[in-house]
Length: 297
Image 1 (spheres, rainbow, N blue to C red):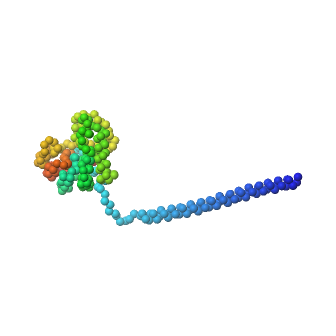
Image 2 (spheres, rainbow, N blue to C red):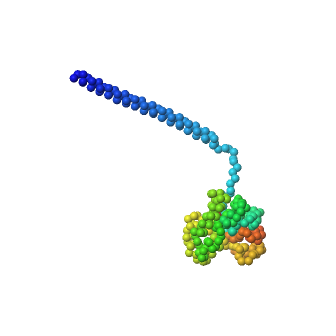
């Protein structure tokens, strides 16, 4: 009986020491893991710190200015907001605007005249004409880099497509506006955006016909921070028979009379050589009448 009791005590001691040994080993194991992890963390932080320092050294801004070629007014046009164009401020301001371009025959002559006279204008471009050839695309760059403004005049200028049954098709119209905007972005850069548009035939014609879709159209323009602008003076280079330079000048004189703020409609598309011929005299006349020149945005 004594032997049995002694054996049981011995077994209990063995179990006890076995458990103590296991706990001790576990403590040693956890301690070893903690030390290893801490060491690696310190090494990692040291490596990252050195990497940041080295990277900072590599990318330290140079004191030498680099020459970067960018397009002027990259984000949008510069000039007078359309909403402010007709506000009276005691000054006489003329906004020369050209529709339906660019053309390789007339637009270069218009640009040459503007540059020679130190004057800038706003060009309402058609996507279809921009895409005619590579020279037309280069003209878009020239228009912009010579500090003129660019507006959107739809892609096709097709009255049948834009105003079927003499009603504004808002969806078709805005689709063409977007198409032309994308063409301009491809040429001038992805950040380019022009908020100004000119409806073919003019917004005034839609009002004359009491187009019921103008309400929807106006709301869309407002949502997209875009605005249409018509004109209040005109050289009549796209009305009826062909007019020669002298006649175009006379029309401008007649339609700007008595106005301090004038937005003059002209065209620089194919076949408008007489407009290019009349432009130097138009600019000279406006200067003599005390007008300054501006662009639209």
